[in-house]
Length: 571
Image (cartoon, rainbow, N blue to C red; front, side, top):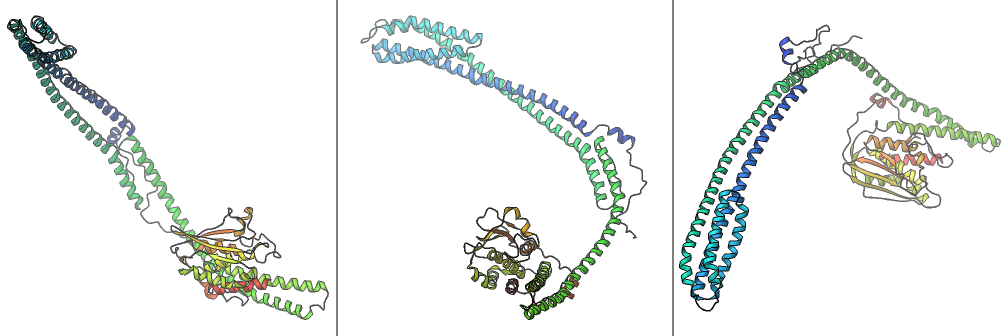
């Protein structure tokens, strides 16, 4: 068979593999992993140094700020409170000495409390020699003034002016002025220390801003270097590789894959190049094989069409000899019945029964083969109407068995009306047929919407199906009972399975239901994809079925009536 050339140019079979030049090999000696390891190590070392520098600046700034907030400012405030306490003492002692009233001792007592609190705070905050010296000088002069003036006047009895108050006050004025001078010197030193702390804090803030700005600039520079390194070492070689591979994918199989970049990317490009060569070589063989398969598929389709046409014609031609055999056997039975011996009558019965069963089997096979081929048009179908027609066609069997058939509100779906009628016909007739002898049949058809599906089920209280046979019941010609117990050919549930699957659904036996049987199946809420018609030649040339066969290509009611007539003929 002559082969066709595949689309796109073919690569030369003897083309030498591409090898990078010396400059490329020298510049791409490192692999991507090595470049990344070195780059990440350098970047991490730089970031660690910058982090250490930033932490030192931050710690130094925090220390200066903490000293200003926790030492200098509280110390100055405590010095001012100490001065306020001593002034309150002086005011209270002077008023008490002039009037002798005890109310004037309250400022004095408050001043002593303020003095003790301020001194306690200053001793905790006085870390330098000068601060301790200033505090000691203030306390020394305060003690001198208190010993000379304050305590003697405060110890005098109340009620009248202290006689020596004026003399002690005048004499203690010089001592208190010296105390004021010591406190002023102390506050001046503390203010100077706080001013130095604020200047240091401002300097540290400036240094911090400079250092953090430098860190930001360095990090930005590192990011630019990393981006540029990745672009040159990884992104650009991968872009070149993707561009070359894209040209090959678009059909230019002769375009070589050029290795660039680090050694591992160059190795990857070499592997892709080898793969391109192999694919280009195999594409020719695949194209030739595809042409052979296309020819074989065309032969297979033609053969299938001929086989389907043969099946239709053969099944129709088989009807005539079967009708003759059945007719003459029945004539023998009517004319010579009772005139021959019992064994001859039995042989005639066997012949009539065998001919009828063969005719029924052929009709069932025809109905089974037509599912999905003759009835493949999807239209809106009202399952309520289908259910009504089906129960009408089964009315005789329903009345004879005393069955009660109920149903949920049934939907309107897209499907094939004839096939859906056959589906309900088989499920309901099975529920009536396989009933329990000790109770009347109770049959219910349910339908529940579940997203894009309708979940339906036919439930009965009959003899049920053993769990060991749940897969066997959907196989054609598989029976679980003898024909004497329950008539039929074992094709009903197989046809139901084919109809449900043709509509895009599934069917199964619910083993949790007891007593009886519960067959669940799904139908799509939307219309399934249309399947192409098969064997048009067979449909055009097939002869009509025998008048004794069920008319499965009619309406659901006609199909149900035909099946009912067939069942009546079997009994």
